[in-house]
Length: 137
Image (tube, rainbow, N blue to C red; front, side):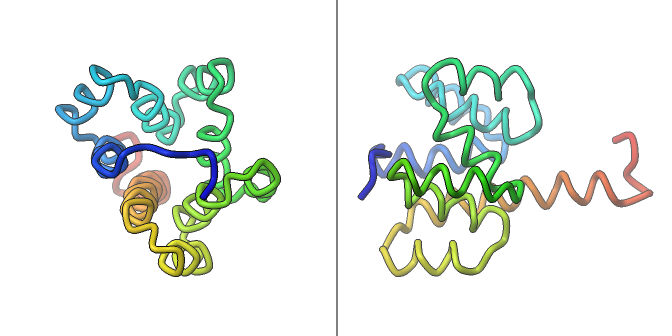
């Protein structure tokens, strides 16, 4: 296992915060997991959130955002810095089957949940940005 460790319920809450559950996001902040909520904002292209992750010592979370957007360099950085599970969350969040297979093989059920939520948000953003009927919404 890599250096990324959170209790099971926190990982499940993180997934729900990613898709916009404000009550759970508030709970995460109130219980010392602010970085996971800020990750959720960064995933939705909030530049201040992305900068905060970098400046506040959460480069690994920023790399997950970038990796889930297809940046191979971010995936390589995660692996090199012993964040293999997060590298596979990013791959799975980007829709790559090998990421999901690694998480399943290594019994990372909560991280599969997180990856699915990342993919859900990315798919929503992609749909909103490419569907001419949704421009401007």
